[in-house]
Every structure is written in C-alpha cells, then in structure tokens.
Length: 433
Image (tube, rainbow, N blue to C red; front, side, top):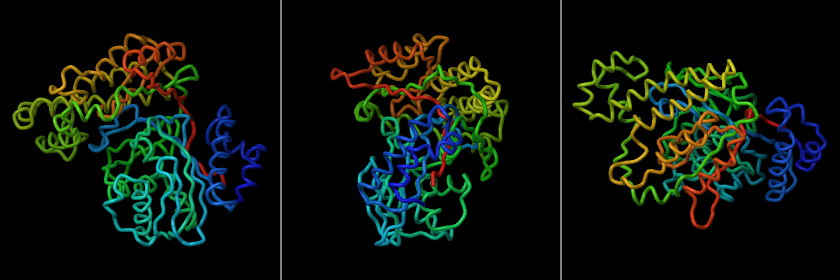
C-alpha cells in the first residue's frame, strides 16, 4: 500500500508502466494511467490522503454461448477498453463506506450481513453479499473505505455487476487476509452474492471473463470444474471495433411486449433435458434430440425444441470461434459470429412476440447490419434481446457509416446518441499496489 499522493506522482512518472504493459498493452498505457489517477484522486477527495491499494478489471462482452452456461455449455467473451477501478483501505470507524459512480455513497455495518429486501438489486446489497460469502468461507472481513470508478456500456447490470463482484471480492479479501484467491473462487463468491443478496440468478462465465481479460473461453462441461483460459491470438486486429447500439429504451419493451410470453430459455432447456432423461443437454447429441423430438413437441411445444437445437449449434460455434482466434482466422471468426447470431434469431424465439408484431427493432438491426457491414463485420443481439442492445463487430472503415445509419433508423427526435464504440482489449484484472 502507498499514500494516494505518492501513487499519483509515481503513475504520472511512469513507475508502473511495465506492470500496465504486462496487464494490458503498451498501446493503452496512457489511457490506463489517466483512469487510475482519476480513481485515486476521487478517493482522496472523498476520504482524504491515505495509504491505499488499487485494483482494475475490464468490462467484458459475451460474444457466443452466453445462454448455454446453465446447461453446462461454453462461453466466449471479449474484454473492451473500459474498466472498473477500485481504490481501497481499512476504515478507522470499522464501517464500510463505498463511493461508486453508479450509486453514489453507500454505508453498512460489516457485521450485519443478513439479506435486506430493501437492498435487492443495489450495490449495497451486493457488497453485503460479498462480505457474507467471504465470512461464510472462513475468511477475515472488516470495515473499509472504497472508491469505485467506471461505467458499464449503457449502464447494463449484466456487464457491470460481474466485474464489480470479482474486483471488490479480491480487494476486500486481500485487505484482510494473506495470499490470493484464484479466479474460480473469485467468480463463485460473486455468483453467490448475486444469488443471495442481489437477487439475480448468476453463473460464473462473466466473472471469469473479467478476471482473465482479452478473449477468454470457459467450458462448463464438467460441473463444478470449469475449464477457462485466455485465448491467445490476434483474430481481431486494430482495424476492427465493437459497436454497441441501444435499439430502444428499457421502458418501451415493458409497455408493448408480453415479457412472460417470451418464456424462460434456461427453464425450457432444462425441461427438454428432463424429457430426454439427461442431466443437462450437454450430455446428449443431435441424434438423441431428434429421437425425442415428437415427445418434446407434444409436452413443451415447438419453441422448446427450436431452442434445444439452437443450444446444440451454439456449443459447436463457440468452440470453433475460439479455435479461429488461436489461428488468427478473422474471416472464419466473423462468419461463425454471424452464423451464431442468425441461429439465435431464428431458433431462440426471444427477439419479439406475437403480441407486438409491428415492433421488430431487433430483426431490423440484424437485417440492416448484414447489409451495411456485408463482408466487413457482423452483428448479434446481446443476451436474449430483452435489453435491446446489438453488438456489431465492424471494420473501422465501416464504423462511421454504420453508426449514422443505425442512428437514423433507431434514434429519437432529440438526437440522443444510441451507439458506443469500443476497442477489443487485452487488459486483465490486476493489482497496481
């Protein structure tokens, strides 16, 4: 630990450049220095000059396989050049004080760790959940001051929360305990905190991705023993960008769509596995699925069968895409990403419902993107489509025209910008001091 003023001086003087180069890349050092200095300065403003530790982790975007994890699937994710930074030290009053850009200041007693219904879906509840899980595992905890700097794309909880979990868990653990937690335990603690106190069912793929950074792959075929690694390769060079586009405000979907009619993908896949007599769909192949097709349709309907076929194809494409990163085959990677997007649109059946046939933003986004990007990129919808966010991998030469077209189609009368541009980042989770 070092004092805040000394850390800022040393950062600006290049003392930590070799660490930043190792954790991220030489091209990103200047931006990283600035982010870290901003976070330390923010801590100093709120809590004063103190000896602190500093942690950083990237936000990540699941590219393929995100919906398969609950059925022991596989997930490929990518880190972007946007991070969360945590500056932390022990507090004198033994209470927890956390300032975040997302929710402002929060305070809690680290010894009152029961779930509070008023804290569900808040960072306060999440911090309480992390402390509770650390204590349950026999680790030391205590009061601390923390400053959290960083915004997830479009303030999406699905992107922000996993990174917050692993970074805050590591920071708290190392403040009061010796040694380090491995990435699997960091991810598990975050998962438990989400499930118990934040009240959002969570896997561990996104937490693992944030720990590893870069392009990362996680295979959950063996329950409790995931295989995860940073995928080494340069499949997406500097002339490609990730463009995220908000296709509609959150409120609109609830107003005009019967959310219940979209169904629960995870639940339906579990039901399909049950009919087949398997623990999870990862344990069966397409031939077995076809043998039970009639029974599945009779008991669950056609959509469940379509989603099961989508699951099978998604696993294969996720494995293939990971291999194309290793072999630096950009064309095949893009084609696989596009193929997975098309499969999810056709077979997941979650990008719109019959009750709102005149509203098809997600379908339009994919269609327009295919035309605009053609052989210079591809677009997919993030998650099951309920958040209305598209993710386009686009060659830099097409980015400007792509964004202008999307703005013209989906933008509002006020001209609110609906697209955000990110670079793919090699940054992994790291501790500065």
